Image 1 (cartoon, helix red, strand yellow):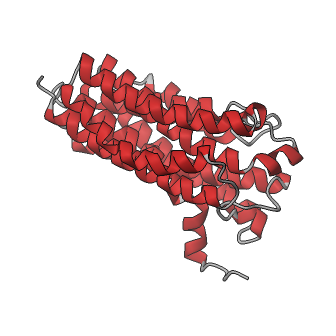
Image 2: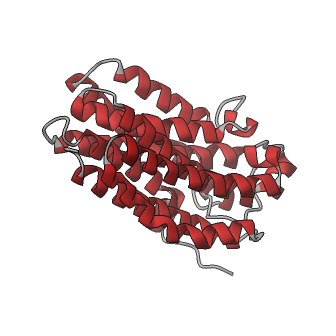
Image 3: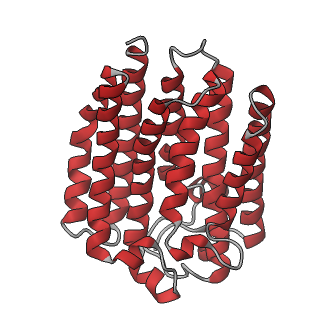
Length: 297
């Protein structure tokens, strides 16, 4: 029997901190892509980080709420879910989701006012996508489109958007690096969905992992990690040579890839989630350093 977490801790657990690198890395990389194109604007970078983190936490709480009221994860192997476990009421978790989305919206409004109002449309799309991932009458996360959402909003939009609010331009470098970090963000979701294939199949949640099946989902995970490093190499060849420093994170990919391709299941995949998060952070840190150091190349 496990101890019930303290009230404050349960909300931290509900925010799913292991997924938060997916919000931090694209902002760091996007800011690094803007280096050399404009004078550093740290407050815009900070607000971009607030938007990304708040959106990620809002999505996590929204998933917790929507899956909880549907009874999707009444029996669960993975990280704690507040509603399903009875640690918080559905109303409280829904309010937490809306509060996080509200923070993201206010920060995004300030950035739009300082740069371009078309960012409001992008922000509105991100908020709607975050809620309807598992919310609403026809959640697209139940149709196998979750990875597309993550790739677009926690890869392309977060990276390109950060570059834009700093340098007020969209660059090829930010697009390619957005694809790279988006691949790593997708890898986090793939591990979650791989772990949950048995329960998702039972409740009719047709995630991409359910649609692909166990074996192909494992290969997809390895392919996504490979694509991330390929993006760093392509950026080094085409724009900034020291972006290749990101490949120094390859050793961190070895263990999780071996675990996944070796057939790890259930709770063993929770460890892979943490390892993938650490890989994402290392990749993001190294890529950021490399991009900044070669900004004038």
